[in-house]
Image (cartoon, rainbow, N blue to C red; front, side):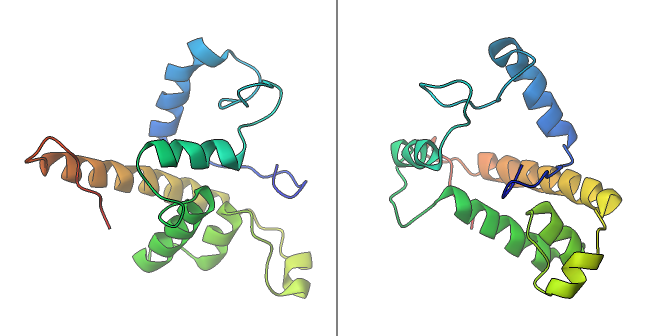
Length: 142
């Protein structure tokens, strides 16, 4: 659900594996990442911001919404995916109001391939960064 509208997300093999690993902890119903004090609600943006702060990132360095910006930028720069499929994955409405009313395409097949490509890309970044560990610390990409 995004902006009170249903929003479907294709899940890559990696995400499905993470969810399977989490299942014993979360159970089959509810949120994968519930709020700390109210399991019937999702974690708030502030909870995620606090996690970033504990990892050493300052307020101006990274935000949850900024990760969406990063994904949009890298997906668009890859040249592999249509802007419409990228925007639909981010649950953005069409900037052209008339087109948005009439275009109900989900771009599903392209989005399935795009989400798998994204997970594979993140794995490549992680693996390349893990190899570059002279001091035992990972070097940030980008």
